Length: 395
Ligand SMILES: [Zn+2]
Ligand SMILES: [Zn+2]
Image 1 (cartoon, protein in one colour):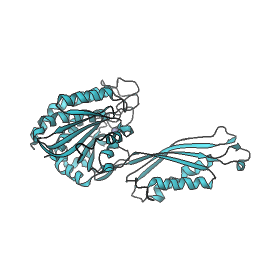
Image 2: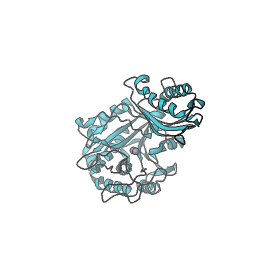
Image 3: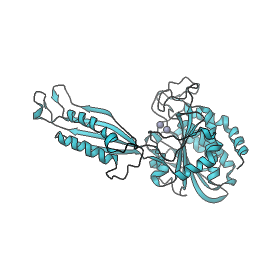
Image 4: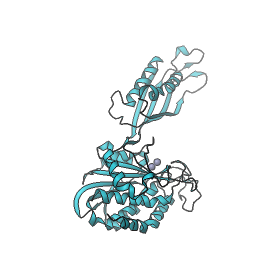
């Protein structure tokens, strides 16, 4: 493909992609409530001649057929914002109190729309189909609902490509790595049931608070004594609640937390962190004569980049985006439901980080913070990445 042609096309949407992003930024919508955003996306795609269907209410999926039949490539953007009050002092600040695009999904949606515009104008050069997926509620596994509604079928998706604008990667850089790049996340609820009694003689009851204290300390051994040193994990108990009064041995304790790890923990073998965690909690509880009940919810599966696809992107796509010295190996313990469009459902895919962190511009604050922002100069790079990926994969 002619690179100067691509440069030219991206140059032409440079202002539009920023304008679209700012519009979405000013009108953020929470997950599953992306009514305005999805209406804009739908109309934009339809105006390009791309037919769309709705999935999971606010999800918009459009297919663009090339000149000849061939493989199907899924390109994805997420549309949801977060329940936070924006504290940035910018002219395009959120107009909705308590709701903010604090993860960069406004940028993702804008980038994929502009990429669709360029690709629709060049569909005669494509062999195969592009499936544009504008997804609701990424923050709460919206992708799983699209998969249930058949987003990976008709036509069957052969490969998928997604990106996250990332403030923890310096602007101008791309984070790209084979294998697991984002963690599997499991949340848990533990209920410990003991027996209330007067604090003057705890032996007459069963104390779930002392039991909880032991559990909280001991489960940290999961990282250091149960998993291999190179198998990363984070385990946090973020909420604990129990008891009624200082002079009464508590009747129950409830704890909530989550664990994240960089491998597939879905097999429920002894290697599975949930199985190990249960064994520890249940046996510590038994030692205290406490009844333990544990409920798990797998929130996101590991984002496991296909090595061949990563190689494809490194060879055919990334060099058109940034210099060779600006492509870095990057992995992060955060989670993403993009795994649903790829590794978790057996589809080779790549999830890439687009660095937007610039201290001078104030765009290096963490995701999900009230002063999160992105370096908009990287939006055209994201557009180009989507277009180049599609043009190369569907050659
Ligand atoms: Zn997020
Ligand atoms: Zn995000």
